[in-house]
Image: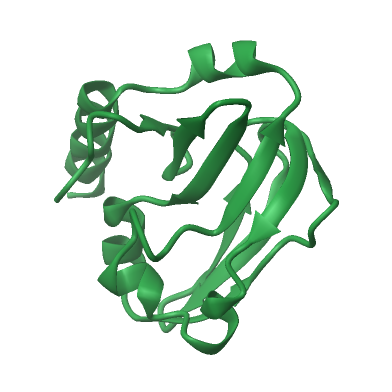
Length: 132
């Protein structure tokens, strides 16, 4: 599995790429692999106010419906509308083409609560051990 070093990660399997005062958000490689083939995505709306750790959408797969939890607070500036007609992009390209939303950061300090790639990898390996 791939966890790019330049990203930050939440324990809810969401990644963040900081671009100035904005955060690009998507689901991790681990999340898409755990879910299996993704068949639908519920996106937030441009202008929605997100609060860190609150639900902002969902991803539907054969196995389940997974809530998406905001890794940071802010205002949704863009959404990846392409996912509505091609949700499988999340499986094929979770870190580039599979981005979900861009958020104007309300509190950049919240980024400090997110995990590094190394810490996230350790977190998911512990989760896998618990599942065995």
